[in-house]
Each structure stands twice: as structure tokens, then as C-alpha cells.
Image (cartoon, rainbow, N blue to C red):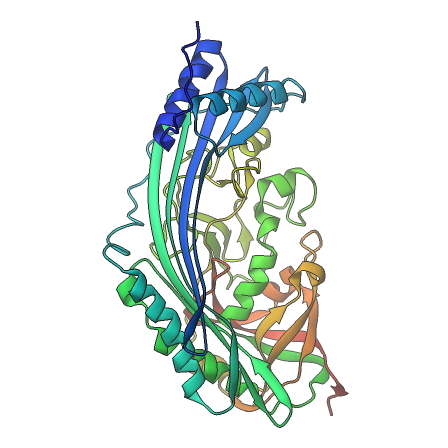
Length: 457
């Protein structure tokens, strides 16, 4: 017999408990994923706040398992009546789809202890947050007369709560927060306009340094002025850590067990093979204290742990959630992912890290002549993760005998990510973090195809 439902809004933990109780009463296997995301975004323009946005979103996502088939639904209304309807919908949806091999709910072991909350935003006032945005804008505007505006500038923070529970007895919850700032000034000289960003991510508000972030962004932007036509040809290249991380982010899906299962990854069937240069080691580390996508457990509640994907050039693992792992005959690696409450459970990386090497920045650049690649863009159209091929708009410099000779006009680089990683000759000793949640060192490669405005003598 059902109990009488009410319209009172439950807390997330109460909603999970209510749904599991209802599911148990109906003899339905159920997983409940819950999240609350409270954020602040502040922008500044000409010494005034131009945008101030506070937002909070919370809700639950349900997966009902009925005769081997998953049925999904979600609700941002946490009343018992709305949750009951969401449960009804999940069960009905499961009855409309085919059973999936390997579909099961599990009672995972306990996750690792991981403090991603601390005291980072405790006691921080709105005025302090506003001052960060204003200081970002002031520091960039006053840094150099060639700064014309700061089109992209923002302070943001978030306070997040995630929970997973299921009818197998799983129940866990995790909190985390972060503060982040971003500055991208527009500089102009002799008819050339250039922009380059800098940013800072932290879990401790007091560590933010808006002045330094904006000054670095201005310095990067000014360095691009005076660009000359880019030669066309195939040249040795230095790829700085940020640019390499951008490239790796475009191809992280290659390591997804789901992508492999669907026959889309060029790495399918190659476990154990030497796929790139032995200097390359790549891992996914969800436990990095400063990682943007760090977490103690994944979207199914499976404990997180570092996973080596490429070790000394050899392909050692793929990313799996419970379903893809079961079908591949292995165990989940803790990489179940949800892209919001409405999305289904899929597979994705957390913090992708290419390990740093032993070559100092000075040694990496010593006596080098060729292209220094500092950024790529247009990955949505120019990168093909099914083949690994890329053709991307880029920015960078021409180096002569280890010194920067001049910045380059916008050019295109083309190739294949696996071939590029096979051509690595040296790996830098410093790791560069990016807001793609990918970190990489600078590398020197033997050749890179470049299409610019003129042929090289």
C-alpha cells in the first residue's frame, strides 16, 4: 500500500530515500543520482560590474532497471508527487526499450577520502567577489596603452553537492567548490588585433591573484603583435603544454569504452600495442586536488582512482562505466559520466594528464629552429576523433636557433594525433594545466605540417 504523498519540497537526501523506498515497494531496481549546483558569475566593464549572476539548480536523475532494460527520467521538483511521477516515467521508459547486455546495479566499495571543499569560500563576501572582477578589468586596462578592451573577463565560483544511491544498498554524497577567474584582453597596434587569455582555478578564494592573471594575459596578447606571414611546409615544432592539452582534449573520446564498443575509436582492438612514442605516458587522474573534474566517485557511485591509459607509448586501458565494462569483459574504471540531469549515463574522462618528462624548458628550445605552436582552435570541425586526423586554425611563433624570431599570422596545422605523439623527440619537465581539465608538458616533435601564407625558402 502506498503512503499519502505531499507537495513539500524534500531535500536531496530525502528525495533519494523516498524514491528508493517507493522502488522497493514496487520491487523495482533503481539508481538515483542527485545534484545541486550553486554558482556566482561576475563580469566587469569600465570599472563597473556589467553582469552579476547567481544561480542554483538541483534535482534528481533516475535509472530504473526492468528486465535488463534501463529507463530514465529526471525531476527538478522534489515533492513526493513529482518524484512519484518521475519513478513512473522511468519504469515506463524501461518497458519501451530493449534489454542491454551487462546492465546491472552494484554496491560499490567505499570511495577514497578526498577533500574538495575545505574552507575555500567560507566567509567570502559578495563585495570580495566583485572586487576580483573589477581588479581583473583594471589590471588589464592599465597594463599597456595597446590594450583596447577586455572582451572576455569573468570571476566565477560554484558550490556543488552530488549524491548517488541505489536499491542494492549504495548511498554516498560528496561536496566540492571552486573559484576561478579569466581574463582575455584585446590589444591593437598597426592595424593588428590580437587576444590571448590567462586564467586561474583554485579551491581557496584567498589564492586568487587577479592582477597577475590579467598581466599575464596582456603579456601573452602583446607577444602576438607584429605577426608575419606564416611559411607553408613541414617543419620541426615545439608544441607548448597548453596547445598540446587542447589537442589531447579533442581526442580524449578515443579512450572511451563506449566509443570503442561502437567501433568509432581508432584504438579499438589495440590494447597492449605500442601506439605512440615511448616518451608518452597518459593517465586520467580524478583524485588531483587541483583538478577541475576531480571527484571521489563517478556518476554511478563507483570509487575513483588514477588510471593509466598509455604507459611509455603502450596502450594499457580504456575508460569504462559499469555497462561498457561488463560488455568488454572487464571492471568499471569509475568513469561513468552525466552531462546534466537530463542526460543518460555515458563514459568520460575526469582530469587527463600527460606526464612531464626530464627536459627543462631551456633545453627543449636550445638551438631549435621551427614552429612554436601555442594554441589551436576550431576543433568542432577540424578534429576527427574517429580517425585521429586534424586540420586546425593555430597561433604561434617562428623560432631561430632557440630564440623567438617573430609571431606568426594565423595558420593551419594538419596531421594525425597518434602520428604526432609518435614523432615526439623530447618531453618538457613542466606541466601546464588548462580549463579543459587536461594537463600536458611542452613537447618537441620532428615534423608538423603547416599551411600559412607563403612558401619557406
